[in-house]
Image (cartoon, rainbow, N blue to C red; front, side):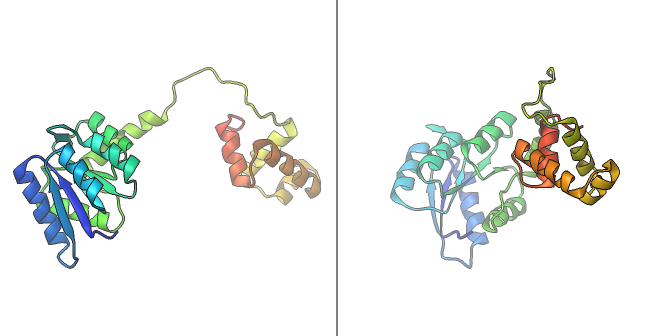
Length: 220
């Protein structure tokens, strides 16, 4: 990722100076312009006047939030990568920032070397997330992935008993010739049934057929 122009937004003078220093040290071999802003309003004025490759955004600003600013960027300058650098680590704020379009979320209280490594990963095309935040996100994934228990609905796609039997064998890794031998049918018959299964499930491969069938509750 080319970083020829960077905007750093933070209303805390010490934090702003620190980020400017870290970015300057990281990009010593590049001709990089660094602009700074201490409010939402001043940041918007700079964004409308200049083109930036990266914005490092504080979460709390005197006249708004970093989430508002990231959302504005997504709408008006979607090519601009925005990373939140904040003292706040609440899950609600983190997810709101990521949903708004932030490419990463870093914590201010990390050591200089940790922030430098994170910024370097962004330069290489990564999405820097503070390790503690990444662990929280991973811990939440199983709960998010579990749907609420509900009565099973009848599948929208209806496969015949024969088609279900063939698909079961497909799921176990058997090829058409092996399935034909197991069921005492010709290979052409198995292929015809397989084509019907593909058509009904709207797929084009064996793997996709098994995946869709399981998603629909047709296979265990």
